[in-house]
Length: 336
Ligand SMILES: Cc1ncc(C[n+]2csc(CCOP(=O)(O)OP(=O)(O)O)c2C)c(N)n1
Image 1 (tube, helix red, strand yellow):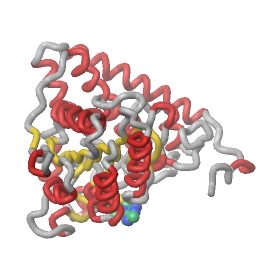
Image 2 (cartoon, rainbow, N blue to C red; image 1 turned 180 degrees about the vertical axis):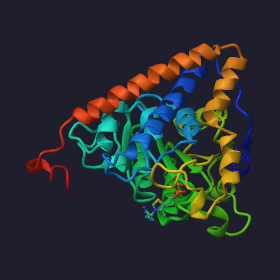
Image 3 (spheres, rainbow, N blue to C red; image 1 turned 45 degrees about the vertical axis):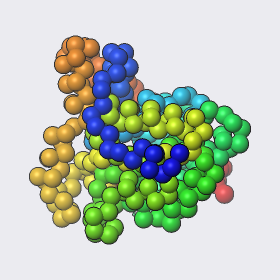
Image 4 (cartoon, helix red, strand yellow; image 1 turned 90 degrees about the vertical axis):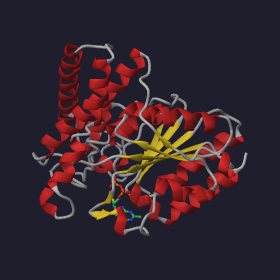
């Protein structure tokens, strides 16, 4: 196949999957939203002493991608990793306890919000060093290729990582070795407070630029969970067939401040009107409306789920707060 035959397209709105699958996606997004909004409220109590990057507004990416994955596939993430961890099946109590710095946390209270991990369900690692886990994901993918296994590795990263050297090294390596690596760029338009257009040459689009590495590259509406799922299914199939890596740029938007629980209209780098325009494209409400309109469920189902999810997160918080801090003698365990 030549480069021009590879898919290099923008993917339009996703068709609705069958009822059970579509409802599962909606509930999974609602769960992540409920968890993060609850934690954002509680953050103000100052009992979570970890820098925390919320992905409120970006839930469709993690949920749509995870819908195309198998339990044996692996995923890696960066600093904004809560949604990726939960969507891959990471334990909620282990996540909340980690944010509270407790021994029962998924990193035994030593890593905080940016070091979530759940290897038992294939969520291998997250790191706040931009781009660091991309190379590790390529390593996992390479091992799957050498084993001729149908497993694939996913690397989640933000648009800021596209300016890191490791991004280019990883793409080059993945293509040369034809490894089953699904690259998911969550383009939320900003790297901290700096917009994409002042960081990259005028007119640059990430997905088109990636083409120069000779791998399939598509862009998708990252606030449409069904479109993300469709793109991820295509990408995952490509990787599983041994055709090499596949790149998906997901257009989305972070609602809260870069790090922390607050709204940041007054920070001077974006306007309230801009944030509001993205809130109007709320991926959770959009998917809820789609399944109700399709007759898959009624509004009362959404209300029931909300109540169940509030209960689940309340129990996880209670569990975390009742858990012990690591003992002083063990503090250096796992530190290298
Ligand atoms: C190698 C490296 N350089 C700089 C930083 C500081 N830093 C942390 S988050 C961030 C912005 C990342 O933006 P993006 O990748 O678009 O992800 P987003 O925060 O928008 O989800 C920066 C520059 C870092 N953690 N690591």
